[in-house]
Picture 1 (cartoon, rainbow, N blue to C red):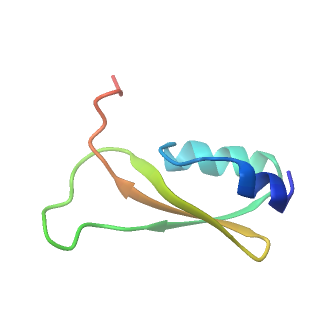
Picture 2: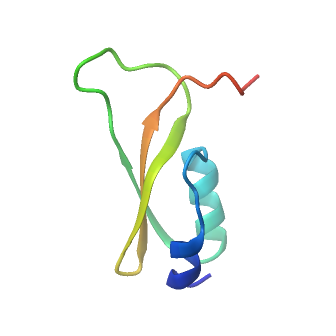
Length: 72
C-alpha cells in the first residue's frame, strides 16, 4: 500500500488495533496517538480511530476510548 492509497482509505470508526494491523500488513509505518477527555471521566471501551493523517511516510491514527454497543 502506498501513501496515496492510505490517504484514500477511510479508517474512521475502526478499532485502532484493527486499523493498525491492516496498515502494517500492507507495509505502512503507523503511529497511534491516544486522546482522553479533559472534562469528564474517561469511558471504558475499545480505542476507535477518530482522525487519520499522513505525516511523511507514517500514517498517524488518533484514537479515543468509546462505549461500544456493537461489541458483544
